[in-house]
Length: 184
Image 1 (cartoon, rainbow, N blue to C red):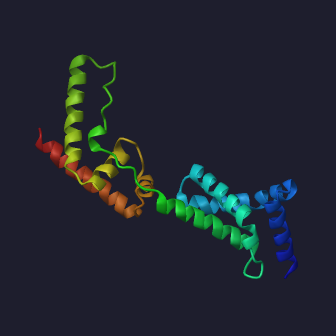
Image 2 (image 1 turned 135 degrees about the horizontal axis):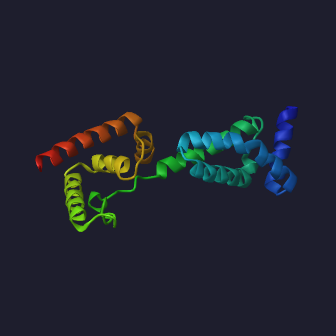
Image 3 (image 1 turned 135 degrees about the vertical axis):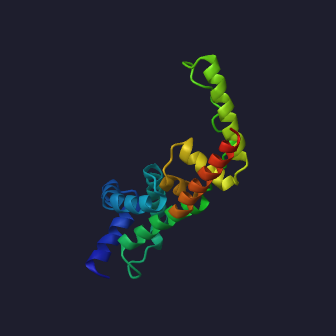
């Protein structure tokens, strides 16, 4: 065992034993690199913080499993964080959005009643056109339009490649444009 692996083992043992000094040093040493790995995988800083917290908890519970002969403490911790982040991504499912629920809020109070009526009619036309799209196209265009997400955010949310999200948004807009144009 090298000097570095001995100090790693002592640091981890202190962390797992609840030694405040070791725990502080352990967290300070790993917080930034684990956060970077988690953020790269999950794409959201709040979720990345949760992933890092779970990674620290797993290290605390599984500290006895660490074997310095098999690798460094850094590599072990990075693997834990990576696995937790990937687990989160695998279990995350897109929340279905019913296209008929999009845009149901009332028109602005500053509009006069005739304008409000026209706005509500147009919203009904859009909702109706959305229901004729496939669920994946409707969700993608709704996330981009109604929820103001970028294509990259839609891709992360839907767990699809960026190109797929861009294509879905583009195709959905084309279909909606044709559909709404035919109503005029």
